Length: 292
Image (cartoon, rainbow, N blue to C red; front, side):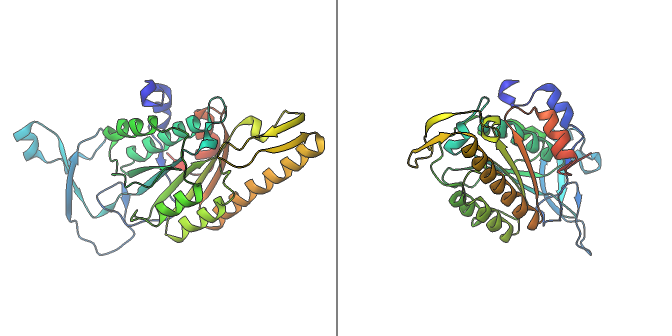
């Protein structure tokens, strides 16, 4: 199950959970979310493969009889939700054991699985890499495609988070929920959040940090190396320095949380040593990211 990112127990944990957006968005094909628009007739939209749990009333029995293959008809009377899973693949995400990228990959896989189980359309994208136009993933059968994409990610992106997010937001990506999984260390992350919201997206930010970043246990004369190319900085780590670091970090975290909440999104902070079960229970269910 390693290539599938999630374990059997983690799949069972997510089986009955669905994304819980704060607002409605225009859909493309039939999903499980009733549209808020009135006066729409039931209009045929497309075909897709049957997945366990689908409403058999929309099974195309003629195709099943001819090809012995279950195919579902989709309609426009209900809406699917566009779920953009943005995983930060910049160099700073290589820090930690497990790395911040590995943690973001697992959390992204969990959110993707919950979205697919709810009939939503998932669009995965890497932050820190040149922009691409991902094809939507629909139905549980497409989850392995997400895993193949996510397992190829390396923390070697050269594009800043702000520039990468703005490229995504300026693309033709249809409005929906953005799940931004990042360490948030780019000083312009607040600007990126604001830009995403301005394009009509609901921004949900999960900040992933290491225990060392939150509670550094260091002392003495040190040289700090910026893994993303900035100049090295010489410091003396003592109680005064660590208190100043703590103050600046908390101020930065507060600015991210404040901006996300201001634009109507959700914010959560996790660490690389927090297990997925705790993240789902303490952040996603209690924070209303997911609902049964």
